[in-house]
Image (cartoon, rainbow, N blue to C red; front, side):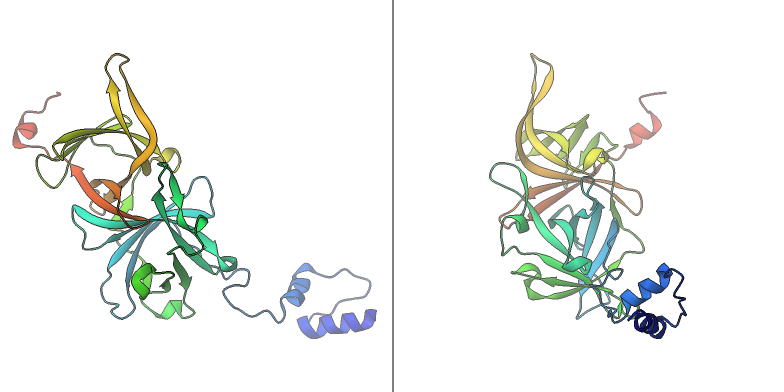
Length: 296
């Protein structure tokens, strides 16, 4: 029996093994690997999406993309990540999708599950609460090195409206998640719509003719790229900010390829995981500011 085993090893690996010696680990690994197909579910053939910007487009029309997918690794779990999908045609008022991504199918695919604000004001992941969650599955195509979109996106339970979409990494990175706002005053779509950042609090002026104040609480670690917005107010007697524990909106901090800063406020819409996005850019300096700066 011993000689039969040695003969089998020699036949499979092409390596002569002496009866008095130990089996080399590399040859033993080849024996175990014999007969294993090179499919994506096998160890070493999984999908991995790094933090950054990806371009999404229709499989029918591959020339131009339709959306960006901005990915940021999840600090509390390295196997997961946050993702924000925004339209390439978006302006200062747009609609976006907020997802939590994780590997499925033994690492052969990634599932994007909508992240929404539940009735208790907490961030929740739809796939953890429903067996019919509208998720997006991302897989790596077998001919990935020969096509414009190496990643394939499939929607389940109504996601993507049944369309097949493709995805590729963006070479230009037109937008990226940034670490917190560095500016103080941001301006919205009109001159009366302003946002003022003061420490960890944000005040909106001119929105619905009412002043609104929020406390920013980091969702993804100390980096501050994503923050929950808790409704609050300033206690003039105590001289400090007070805030609710319930999340009302979500904030994203971004920069464009030209290094322009963006403060994005995402307000929940009627569809799970879908948000109305409002973009604020830094207030530009006037000619008076340029010629007569306040600090010298």
